[in-house]
Figure 1 (tube, rainbow, N blue to C red):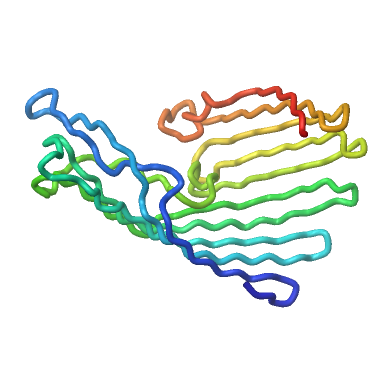
Figure 2 (figure 1 turned 60 degrees about the horizontal axis):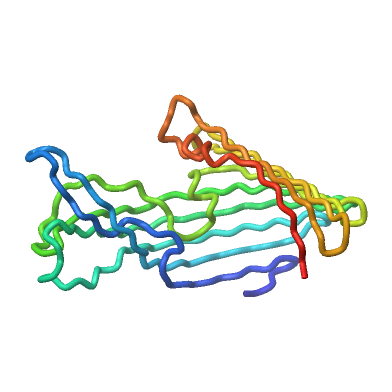
Amino acid sequence: QTTIGDGDLGLSIFKGNDRAPSVNAANVFWEVEGGPPSLESLLGYRETLVRGLDFVTFFGNFTVRSELALFKSKTPILNLHIIKSPLSLYEFQQDISYSQYVIQIEYTTNSDIILSGQLIGNSVQNENYEWYHVTSSELVDFPYPEFQPGMGNPIAMFSELALLLNSTGVLMDDRLELKGNMMINLDEKGNMFSGSIGYSPWINWKLESTITKFIGDKDDLENTFTIMEDFSNITFNIIYNF
């Protein structure tokens, strides 16, 4: 990490396992001879190498941040006992290169209300998939599950390009906290809205209510935001800190 003018520039390298699981094998059955196979997916964690670059700078009440990460993700070879492995077991190998970026502009008003906007994007540069039988190592032509990033910004898992708007304000001598969020999917139809209000009537106590609403595309049942509509919710919390 180093300082350049009024900004900070950072470089990072990380190697580890994905935070989110993905398909790495499946038990495959044919219910009807000559018909399509039925896959019983087994989950595991890919190994991923991450190279990151980030920069932050300040202009008066504005803060500008940008991040770029390059990912190289690969499924590890399963450590199996060939003799004891079931004949129905097939291994799924993934070798994928993808990238994610975030550009954020944040503004703090004179009344300490924070307004921010983020442009979040991701793209896949290279995809290689192989299904093969664990015992015979024979390559087979099974359908590939849709790739989902196992690392990086969680928002990037929803959309290839999205705009995230946030606002946070604290009023009444820090007793009342208001938050609002909106996510606009720029890749396909879909939006997410979230708002919360928190009130502290006494020291260490806080009453909080949050509403989250996903809106997808009623004509596209495979749309990520359409699927997430079932996760729209309203919550009420009573919080005590000690």
